[in-house]
Length: 177
Image (cartoon, one colour):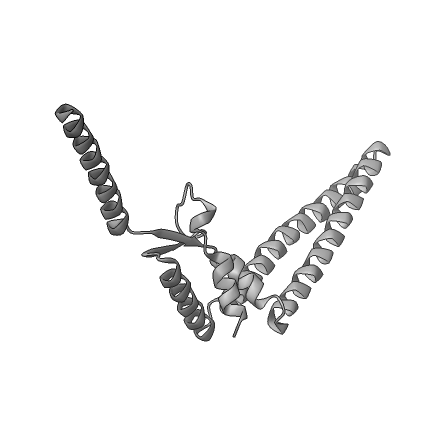
């Protein structure tokens, strides 16, 4: 009987000890969260005139790119026809024209993508917006008990669970003003 009481006492002591360690460990472990800043900005600005203008500019650029690609394909077809007709001078001139168009297209894509990216950065990283964004991230982080918040796109994050992603909560906070 006495051995039984001692055994129960030992088991209960061990259980309470393990519970105490678990509670202590959980209280001292920092909680880390992630946020997708790009998704927040896209959601926040999607109805703004500046964002709509950028979307229109992108669409206009894509149409132009498609037209130039069609022109290049047309030239390739003409080159093939010229070569089949043994008109090598025409084939050579068309080949030069094709190279100019391909180079033009490459440069056009590079420059327009760079311009649009710069405009997006200006929009997404304006002082007023960033102040509000940081305020809302801090608010959500404190409410949810996070000690550290990382941006999904700017850090090398190899794994995370949805429970630590506060992106949607930050979007809700930003949209409720």
